[in-house]
Length: 114
Length: 114
Image (cartoon, rainbow over all chains, first blue to last red; front, side, top):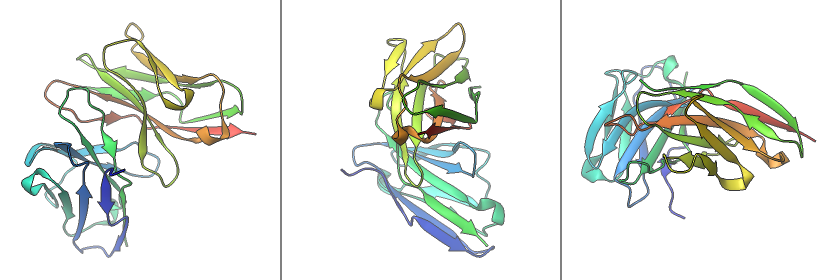
């Protein structure tokens, strides 16, 4: 079963450092999403790709955050100059082309900023 | 704008008794609605989805939900709770024109008592 995979699963960093997360979607899915989930909350949308094009970004995605999806396959999410408020679970999901296709989620990357 | 309200942050039931998790939505468009479950240290798993076909939707593990447009509700039910149902449940709305992002509720934590 080749579901959505995310690496690393856990990341501990010091405030001010840069971090990068990777997401590998289900191979035939052309849509990819990033969400952030903090303790006791539901996931919040960050950004969305269709193939390699980044089509929507949330205002939650400050200029310290950047996401890419080169060649429309895997995606990376980079956070520069991390702050303690960035500590959260970062979730990646992918879906197929249809209007009603559900999203399949990866296990997430838990970021702790000290 | 779309939004979702999960009316209970915690629900406790005894094993073998019915489960009701409540969700109300707000949407200017015909929404797609989903319920996802998140077990501790596991990824989000789709339970069921409503996409404007039948208003009563059956999902996995005996769960079902009824879409009621007049009440803007999409409550999740199960006739008989099992210990393995203990988890966090999220109601999700999607489908605003031009975007496929998910809007999550804040979640309901289900506790099943022996």
